[in-house]
Image (cartoon, rainbow, N blue to C red):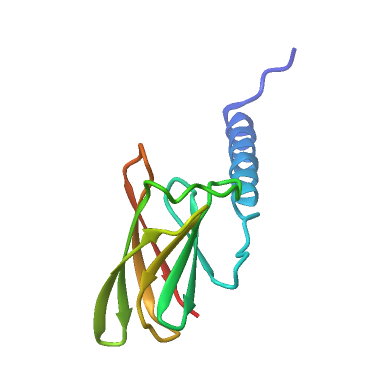
Length: 130
């Protein structure tokens, strides 16, 4: 049996790691916005779709596979940055995977969201609203 030299083994290992990383990115990239909003993702790969409407913000919670996560028991807060204006909004569960907050924000507002799902620690994500 032929023994591989150190450089060949290193190249093979690097190639395998790259293949695994690429597969993980492709798997997480499969979630698309379903409600016309913008998607943000937590460090644990839970996507949140944020939709801006007249007078309110709507958030839809999902897991890494795109399956809806119940909003009941979840906590979601947003810090909203529109130009030099800073405000905040607290979301409440509105059935299913939907959460709603009262807020009037213009397009282009940056939102820093803090999401806490039941039994999990708080995570942050950022989006720019359309």
